Figure 1 (tube, rainbow, N blue to C red):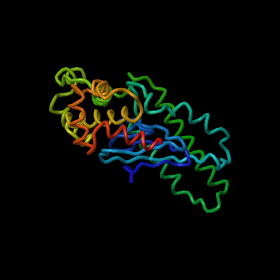
Figure 2: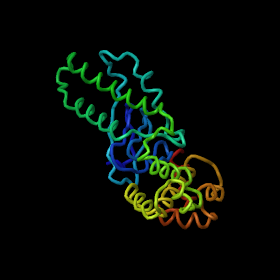
Figure 3: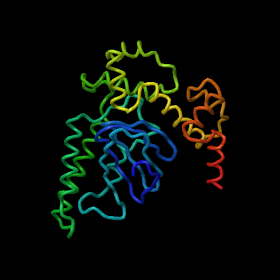
Figure 4: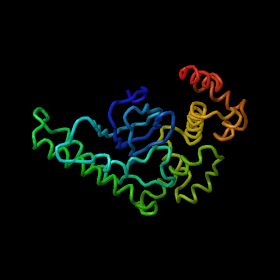
Amino acid sequence: MMEDVHRHEFDELVIVRHGSGFHIINDQVEFIYKGDFFLVAANDIHCYQSTNKLSVINVLLHKEREFKFIQNIDALIHPIAEPPCTMKKHRVSLTDEELNKIGSVADMINSQCDAEFDSHYFACAESGLLSIIVTLFQCASRKGDRIHNTDSGKRHLLNYLRENYASSINWDYLCEESGVAKRTMFRFIKEITGYTPEQFQSRYRLLKTQELLRTSDYPIGKIATLCGFNNAPRLTEAYKKQFQRTPSQERARVSNSVI
């Protein structure tokens, strides 16, 4: 169901509990993995693609349903609702301890009997929601250099891959910079993404190509350059193999749907 394109009539706060995948929201592509979190606003169109053991916690916020104790939910959510397309280059993620805490609180909320929506229900549910939001806010406020040493190399690696998908990667240099052996690095990437490093980079480039075809009027040749392809013919060949249509046909589909 995650791969189905859909929208909601409510805001959806998403926390990645396990695994990884590509999240596509309003045609904007972002690679997400364990510890990431983001907001999908009401009427946003989104889906997940190329997921690898992806498990998420969804906090659904129905604005038309009033809270009993929380007075201004928008003010609470705003600081942590940074859109995927503007995420910090070296963003931090939730630690395992924070994820476990949020998971326990989410399970507690789900276990509440909501048959009568009495004060006990709202007290438990809203205090739990505040606990989750405070944890996310504290994480979003941390500096990028304050991540745990045990995770810093792997986090740096994944951030680097996300930000440099269009570049030719010097794996030896990246291993040295991340402090991770090359064999360990390749095994880690396959474990996290489900792809070899080359396959992951290719998939990312093609999804970013699809994003630009749908959201920009750049010539296909420029898109090829921006997304790491040598030229337009190479892009067309790879794109058709992946999506069974050419970049020009993709753009035509978008134009027709708008009309």
